[in-house]
Amino acid sequence: MIEELAKENFKKYLKSNDYRVTPERFEVLEAILQKDGHFDADELFLKMKTNESKVSRATVYNTLDLLQECGIISRYRFGENHSRYEKAIGRPHHDHLICLECGDIIEFVNQKLLKIQKDVCKENNFKSTNSTLQIFGKCNKCQTKN
Amino acid sequence: MIEELAKENFKKYLKSNDYRVTPERFEVLEAILQKDGHFDADELFLKMKTNESKVSRATVYNTLDLLQECGIISRYRFGENHSRYEKAIGRPHHDHLICLECGDIIEFVNQKLLKIQKDVCKENNFKSTNSTLQIFGKCNKCQTKN
DNA sequence: CTCGGTGCAAATGCTTTGCAATGTC
DNA sequence: GACATTGCAAAGCATTTGCACCGAG
Image (cartoon, rainbow over all chains, first blue to last red; front, top):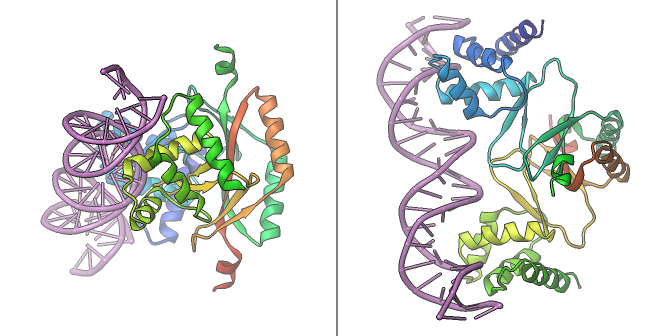
């Protein structure tokens, strides 16, 4: 089960880096696991608050950093003034088409792309940890709307 | 000459969209044309201020938006809390390797990448206006530093 | 019992906005 | 002249920080 795996991984990550295993951190992770698709920090905080959680905004931000560092979530910047996050565990790498008109985000996977990225890194002697390709434009729906 | 081309393009863009052609907007463009590499809004504003310009921060931001809309500059979000810009006119499309350790940004061009992006857009019936691929990791220098 | 983590509120940093004055069309 | 654009300062928003208290190791 992915949820258990995520919690297990997070615990291991915390311990091996001498971070403390606190209930607040796992409350945040749990809330994320229940979410689908993209979300931002404040959205997550408000959702938790609605669910009676006492976890503060500061802790949500702190935990999002940790979860991103250990690869349980991905952080994106889609040309906005805030970060967006998404579960990364149990999902293959994918990239995004972003509609500038309606804000829709379409995900796609392309193996050739990953191969080329690997080549580019090798050519430049660069050790990649993660990557994001964002294509901005107009989605199918918005093109036919006029 | 690229500078003249940029100014000409900007003027055309403003007129065809019923924006006014103001000296402030061209002061900003001129300051950008003198810059090399990446820069951010405040850096540009301060540079202009040093050069006795009276142009305000608000106008700098406003103008950066317009210049990006008409393709004279590119805007990037390299996982930071602010935008970075770069001249786009007279330069081929390129992408970035970003070192998370020293902050260095390495540019690269790869034609195959662009071809695949085009294919992806076609498959999804998506009309692309621009794109950015960012690969995060550790640069050559930082790998050997230890 | 130590010191990292937490909540809270205040601070920060980038960007946008409100408004009166200015200058383009 | 009309009204978009400007400068300025204040506001806005996402995120971080300072500090006293709490609780994991």
